[in-house]
Structures are given as C-alpha cells and as structure tokens.
Length: 214
Length: 424
Image (spheres, each protein chain N blue to C red):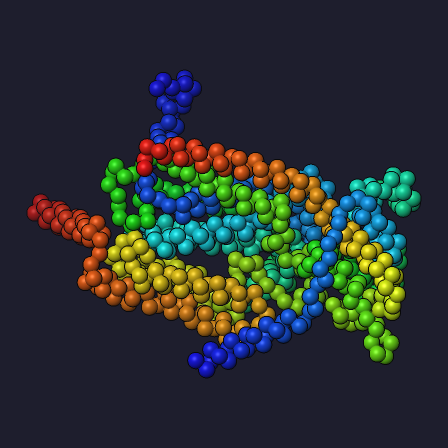
C-alpha cells in the first residue's frame, strides 16, 4: 500500500514536472484566407528569409497566395520559377554568426507540436532579463535574436499590431508546410458525405438480405 | 442457370465456377457471428490499400539518403494527389495495426485459437511479425529524425545477439551506422515483404475455409444455423467496411498528421539525437517491456518473448469449456486485466525514461507475463469449478459430444491396427 502511495505521488510529481517544462502555447485563431496568407508571406519573405530558407517552397507556389506573376518575377530575379526559396544571407556566414544554420521554415509548422500556434507563441515569448539580455520562455537560450524587438515593446497599440502581424506569419507558415490542406479538407467533406450514403445503403441492403435469417 | 459460353469454356479447363461456389456462395458461416468477426476482412482490405498506395508512392520515391526526404516533399507538393497517396499510406499503417490488434483481441476473448484452429492462430502470429517488420522498415523511408533514430536504436538491439552481435548489426544495416545502404535495403525489403504477407494470408485463408469460422458461442452450430458467406456476410462485411472507411477517411482528410511525429518533419541528422526517441504507437507496449529490463540482452529476450508468447496460447489455456470468455468469468477477468496492462505499457512506452516510469513499466511487465504463466492453472481450476457450479445444457452437450467423437475415433483407430496386425 505504501508503495502504491509513493508511486502515485511520484507519478504526480513527474507529471507536474513535465507540465512546467514547457509553457502552454497561446490560444490563437489562425485564418488562412488569401489576403492573410499574402500579408504573412510579405513578412516572411522580407524579414525571416534574411536568414531562413524555405527549401520546399518554389517561387511559383507564391502565385497561390495572391502574388501576381510580375511580383513573383521581381522576387526571383534571375532564378527559375521552379527555384526554391533560399535565405538571402549565405548559410556559411549565418553559421559563423549564430553557431548554427537557421532552420528551414517550409516545414517548421509541421515539425513543432502545435504548428502555427507554436510559431505564434515563440514570437510572443521573448522577454528581457533584469541584466538587459533577451531570452525566450518557450525556447530558452534561443539563438535567434529578437528581430522585431518584442521584448522591449511597451506601447499596447504597437504590441497589438505586432501580434496581428505574427498571426499572419504563423498562418503563412502553416500553409507553407501543408499547401494542400484547404483542398484536402474540401475534398474530405464530399468523401465523407459519399461514404455516409453508401454505408447507409450497405446497411439497408444487409438488413434486407438478413431479413429471412432472423 | 445457363452459363455464359466463355465461363463454360473456362470451367472445362479451370474450376472457376466451382471455386466461387465452394468458397463464396456455398461456404457456410455461423449465423451468430458478431461485428467483431468483421476485422479479418478489414485487415485484408487494408493490406490491399497499403499495397496499391505503396506501389504508386514507390513510383515517385527515391531511396537515397540525399534525396529521400525531399522526394517525400515532392510527392506531398508536386505529384498530383500525391498527398492523398502518402496520407492514405501513413494512416493505413496505423489502421492496419488497429484492425489486427482488434482481430487478435477477438480471437483471445472468444478462445478462437483453440483446437482445431491452432494453425490459423500461428499463421496469424507469423503475419503479425511480418507486418511489424514491414512497418518498421517502412518507417525509415521518409528519412526524418524519428525514422533515422528509431532505426538506429532498434537495429542496435541486435548487438545483444550472443558472440556475433556486432557483425549482425553491421549485416542488418549494410554499414557501421544507419545510412544510405540501410535506407536502400529497407526500401527493397519494405517492397518485398508484402509478397510474403500475401502468401501467408493465403495459407491463413485456406486453413480458415478448412476448419471454418469460430463463433461467439464456442459451440459448433447445427447445419441449419450456418448460412452462406455470400450474400449474408459479404454485405455485413461491406457495411463494416463503410464504417471503417468513414473513420479512416476522417483521419486522412482532416487529421492526417495525427499519426506522424512532428520530429519526422525534420530531415535525418546523424549528428543530432532528438531528446526523446519514441517508436510508433503500435510498438510502444513492447518497447516498454524492452526498457523495463535493465540488461540489454534480457530486455531483447523479454520483448521477443512478449510477442512470441501468444503462440503458446492453445497450450496455456487448458480448459475444455468452449467459447473463451463467454462462459468463463476468470478467463474473462484475465482478458480485461491484459487489456488494461497493455494500455499501461503503451503509456509507459511513450514517456521519457524516469525512475517512476521504469517502476510502473516493470510492474506492468511482470503482470503481462504472469497472466500467461498462471493461465494453465487458473483455466484448469476454473473448469472444475464451473463443472460443479453447472454450465448451460448446450455447452455440456458440446463437451460430451467432443469426448464421444474422440472415443469413437480412437476405438476405430484401434480396430484398424488390430485388423492390420491380424492380416500380418
């Protein structure tokens, strides 16, 4: 009996320890309409892509989130439309500066538990230590600098604008990781309706066939 | 019914119509089968689904350490409906295990593994092992972090082989570490093993159509209580398939990443071990047993035994009372205890290895093996207790009938040998 008590106690302790390890992700509603994705893409391509590549995304894919052909041509310059989006700074230089090559962003929403919510929470988790250095609650000792200066942001209006912008970035990164999601869900509705009807028909036929058995 | 001339032509050369008659329209199945008997058919369906989606995936996949991860993304993004093929295949792997585990649970619950169905149970056991091997090798192919490190950990277990451990590991990997050679051979074997599975499924079905289906009562039904497979059970199976597909497609179209670890969306990196390596959910209970034993060889032996021990069930269960759990309260209690224990092991297998988790894992492992070990004693005692307490009439008749036919057969054999000896 004593063992059981100590065991459940131990379990509870370990569970709370697990819970306190990573702070909970912020609850955020992400919209995936073209306008939102387009605005998110602008931030990602102009700010994030300075250091981060998006290797599984091609320039041509941007047409799907509201970029015009002329805009895409402007972005790609001499590159092919099928070229993948590389970071603006060369990886070697980035490695020298930060110690690691910044992770590719095209699958980041799938590679982290919570997807877009993780991305959104990460940006909101920068804080200033008493000594003035910046760290991150969600990812302690993160090597990415607080690019947008959220840790020192005090103006509520400015903060609100920042969060709005990050919501769009998170939405765009979710799209980048799974560009067929909308098509998939749309098709899924029809598949389930079809299956529901055919299952109902099978059930009616089965009942009819079995009516002479019962 | 007049037959089409082509069918007539074939029938003179090949038992085409006779086959369908014998195996479908005139194959008799107990009428009282519950929906738990649908899962064998479902397993066959998922097998075909996996083979078909897998063949198409293989047309675009590249088994090369440099290209594998990107080729999956190519399938997901550029191949028309490639995402559908890939999600059907990845969800299908989990669905396969769900269906097979329910199929096995039904067999255990109703005692369907008992005479004369031991060969069905054992061919099923071989199928389970082949399926596990196929799933394990398939999991390496996306070449993500979990793929890579899972394969690294599991192939490393073979180091526990006495005397030649190190050589066995190199032989399996084709290299000193999991690398390009491993990926290439796992791809070849992942493609090849389903052929073996099809063969064994054939044996499984031949045995089934010879001994016929068991049924929830555990008693062989009278002839009038057996009805033909088609159309009765074909339509019952189709209805079950509809329900299965509704759930399956719910995952494929709305939660396709439910069964994919986030870490597996990061390309394999031999220099960076993920903080917490977990196998796929269907291996978790066995992984928990592996980790419960502090010694590596002991752990590997315990894990292997935990799967192979099922084969001994026809001998461990010594009760003559038919119907598995139906008439046997102790066996039923043990069945549910086993299900709970397996759930605990699954949970423990998914947790980081802390001291508390190791203790829970050890207790659950002891319970796991104890249930098998005490079964011969409990089943015999339970039988005696139930005979005193009284069983339903038809069950007693069934046991008496079995004994009677046994005696008759033995005396017939004796007379035959006596006659042969007299002739000599």
